[in-house]
Length: 196
Image (cartoon, rainbow, N blue to C red):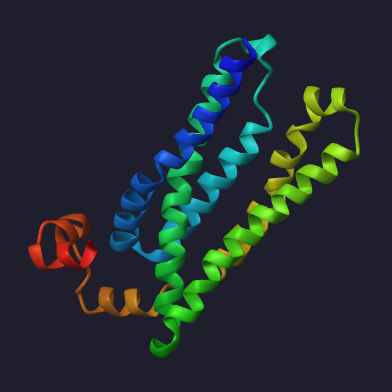
């Protein structure tokens, strides 16, 4: 049923969005425990790996209902990673920025995210226009997903060469990192007011 298929597609897209807050909590906690740089590496590999893997999923005709289930699982992994990626990026940039320019530098993250969305649409439109509609629907839609591997590799190389956040490194050296960041954030009434 085309209507049911379309609704399932929208639900799959929405599922990836709905898990983002959980990704922010999970990876935010991880970043507070082991460091921003390493958490940043995990989120890009998870997000990029899931995106690339969508382009490799066998067709419904080959594996049946496992095809949409696999897409859903990969979308959930993407959503978790993006939730952690955005919060991690803001924290990482803020902790590297001069105190009086943190708002300015972290604002670039939101702008670049929108730019990335526009670039992805351009890649999709160029790829789609370079082939017939039948080819696009048969195998061509996979190309943008597979091309994302190039960006993942570049991102991993860049992140591997980045230094740890100076504020986190200092806190860790002084033994001031939190053992339970979520409890410290949400379990204390004063902190909870700040969080809210």
